[in-house]
Length: 300
Ligand SMILES: *[C@@H]1O[C@H](CO)[C@@H](O)[C@H](O)[C@H]1NC(C)=O
Ligand SMILES: [Cu+2]
Image 1 (spheres, rainbow, N blue to C red):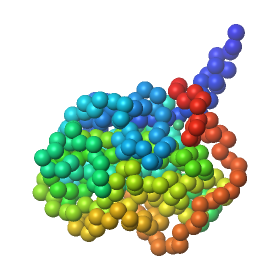
Image 2: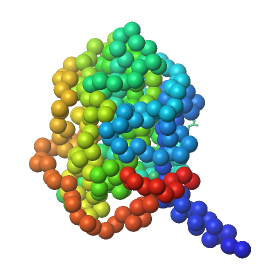
Image 3: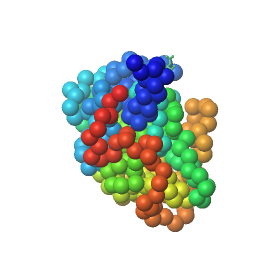
């Protein structure tokens, strides 16, 4: 008979190597709403597996296999909303970066019947990586049990999808290795915002998978800079260009603050560094967790 400690050690290991997660609950007014009530149920609601193909329509809301039945909830422009994280364990376990995008349903189209296609997505929040020129790279989103962010005050009233995305980078050193954990919520934004959100991108389309922030070895050599995937964050106003080819600048995010305010970002215009191509070491502890082609057990 195995000792209890051996069993617990095994369980702990299994939990660690298959630590996937979802974003089932929208947080509104500081309260967790019911799981999958305002968030479209994702294909991975049970197995928690990530999406790794940036070219599939499932890179948008990862809900193709589900019959979308989410409700739409009212939120005021300028207010703070968020998503909870559920999984084993229930936090953003993997090292990675986070983005939140929004897209406005066409006037006259109910967001619950809208697929979110087209150049319609603008970024409202991000938590990037912190680098210091090659000594360390850290990921402030790691370990979060919930993610909160403000809806920009100048967001025009209307119905929107809010898409949260955590890009786990622990096995991202080969193409298709980055793991996208995604969910989309349905909201009715109220208020008198008159901004013009942008730049606008499409899903799929926003990423090729070859971006230096997606195809990256975070272990060796330690990246000297990190370039956050996707367009710049729209913070309000009318500066959105609507461009679909915006090149995101290298962004270094400070460590997350303890408040609900967005992390302060410092935009640097340093030269883009080629993605590390090392055959280096370092990922073994996380290696079983997936990556494209992983066919082993991923559910725990
Ligand atoms: C809301 O969900 C988060 C993430 O699961 C959890 O940490 C928090 O305690 C929950 N809040 C309440 C009031 O239940
Ligand atoms: Cu995982």
